[in-house]
Image 1: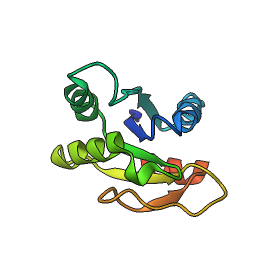
Image 2 (image 1 turned 135 degrees about the horizontal axis):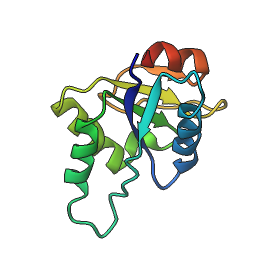
Image 3 (image 1 turned 60 degrees about the horizontal axis):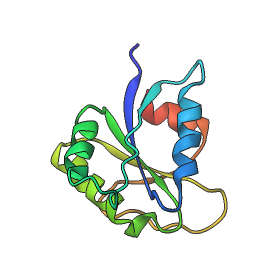
Length: 124
């Protein structure tokens, strides 16, 4: 079975390590997914940030939002979700930290706990 291609949306300024951890999980032998590394910072001098994000999201099978304390209001995440909706890509949200109370990103689907069983179920 082919692995699902995942675009990871995350709060670049606060939660880059969450994306790195997810990439690590994708390298496990029984992982059902590969990560399309779309680490694009909206504030970067690149004027074509949104078109690059759209291209990467278009090639993904699913978008995972790694949720931290401020993700629900991160402008880059909100734009990526808008693009994913326009492209009709499935979106899931994974709570990135064990402790805390996290707000879901608007219009980005259900929140799930981050554990291997959930990832395998969502991405198989």
